[in-house]
Length: 178
Image (cartoon, rainbow, N blue to C red):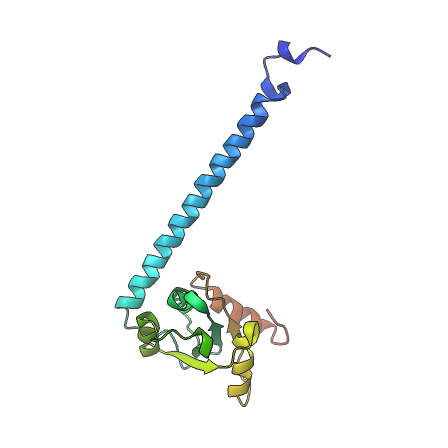
């Protein structure tokens, strides 16, 4: 085999290209993380503006599904963004319910949640059932189940068509859980 120092190609170099590849990957990772942080800040600003200025309802009483979520600690002050994003599509839920336990409630409800209440958000106070707080209280307050429940997380921005797509998938396969 020819010696690698005679070849014009650097792929045989055991140190320099490998170090460059790691540095390039780390730089790309930093750029990607910075881009994602910027995107999150832009989305948060967008949903905040929508929360402050929008008067449109986040629910549709003719709809065929409900949305529920819970929040805790300082997330209560940012949960509006998840609700705004999940309820921003063309098909809105029949009910949008935020379950909070007594431990989750700040001294005063954030203004963002008060504005969402005016647009249709229901806030129901319940015991702290940890991760089951999204479903268990819902099961207790409903006598019959004639529509599906979509549970969402409080720290995610949702695609505006996600809930519609989930509902349509459920309508095609009502015996399945998605």
